[in-house]
Length: 374
Length: 223
Image (tube, rainbow over all chains, first blue to last red):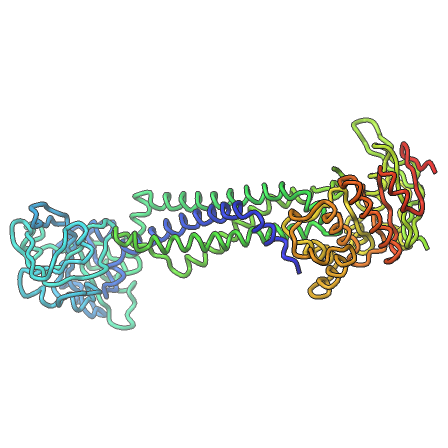
């Protein structure tokens, strides 16, 4: 059977390229923006999602993991006493200034606790041993710090409030939403470097015994410690992500970008199909005159929309994959997961078909008698 | 045996408050293998009559009978079905699909008529061979001369064995030599393929190949 839809579409190659280019651009816009959003959201709760803790205890009204407040570090003992708790430890999350060899200072987000190894923190270590952190004034710095803090090696020293700390390890993939580099040090060292943290902690992380209900333990901790907030892992992860979505306009920004991307795709395909329909109106009239119905022409337009959608999606997807390593160099994590690919493809096809609908009305009005007019 | 009949066909167009009567009681009959030329001045109703006989327009009153079946004017679907089954068209402007080769133009028309695959391809090849374009099957319309385009249009109308061919001004866009070749082709095909052929024209040469010449003036047949 003659594939008229494809033949017409490829007959005018320039128009076809413009169409798929427009759709490709829109697809890339949606994929990159959503991918960056997912990446940032992943960073916003990366530590919560990786630390092996079922329940988090935080100071009252702590909005997210990065903006930590403090409370007494002795409360951990009362949490440990609750039946069903396997272990509980203090965790400090604190922004500090780190002096660089150049004399400049750079902000660092420090995660400090006593038994990192027990909590799967940091979750990816490229060099060094996390157990060494307890053995002196040592520091493990994430690879992502290279961009802001310059190249560093194991054995290098950096200064915090005028005191030298030795780098004994490197982690990988420990990123925060704020993009501030993350470092890991022992809890006591962190408290000694920052007088206001003396006897204080930011969080208590709680690991439950197998089969114990996290919500039940969270409720019991709330009863025993009414002046702190208690969250399960999922609640705290959601809260930390949601803070940035609702308080920074990030959610609205994403919505607007996706909306604009979809709008561009629809406009490009609709405009191209409409002008193409108008250009081929006499041909469609001929098809009707020789016995073809509206349905046949609708199928042609729908098929053209689908071909444009698929080709445009492939171009957009390829551009997104090309951008991924470029963005990684800027410490921007572009997360494009299987569901996002599938959803974007389905959305692209749906919007292209919607655009084709605009032409259906025009086609239905074509009078086959036009073929007898000169 | 009559394959196409018009019985007291009228056609009125409504323009604002007034009515314009284009056809005023036309009756005619065409048989298989017969070539009928329909002539008349511009605005006399030739094209309107051709459109009604081709089941593209519907008559205001009267009846059109195609292969002994009275045409149901109420359903656009049944009109299209009659066009697919019984009628082949040759248009003045050829109306080929520019993105398709000569072969595909004919094959696509066959697809519309319900023929698919190898059957349609063989039939398209046969039709193009009949009109002398066996060597141009893979050529796009833009690379064909006016006469060749008209031959492709004729092949498209011939393919599928429609018993009726309705032809609109077939020589209007051709030089006299090519026009004569096309008319000779019509004459040969009408006899050879036993098709009924109605040719609307201003060209006096058409009457030389026609079995009958009908003249229409002010919406009425005058001979």
